[in-house]
Image (cartoon, rainbow, N blue to C red; front, top):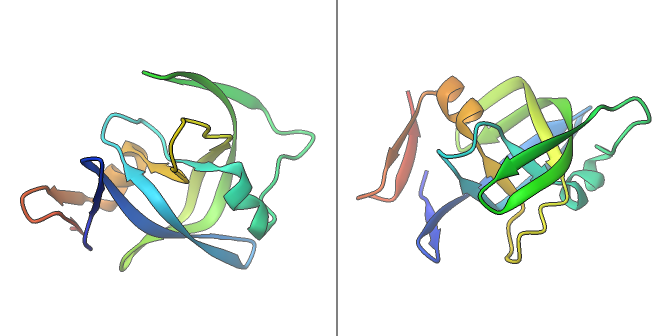
Length: 126
């Protein structure tokens, strides 16, 4: 699958499925510096993935600061021809000052056997 470079950062489009509903999410950053995969809450609302009263709120931290998120296991997360079933994601506000709808973290990249070829601007899966 081709990587789209935006301001020299690698982005992809992925599909998230939850309880039989699915959504294509554009502008998802491929981030080897992120331990987990996170998506913007406003994108996930369209497939009825919203916070529940019993959700535990976590704080994730990065270079830009901290953010409150909740976790949920989804039916699958798919990039290209590589779906990962029963995958746990985090959902949060993702207000980073530029258009980003998600971060594809190392949890997904390792489990999927991702091979990132920056010269060819491709991501493949073993």
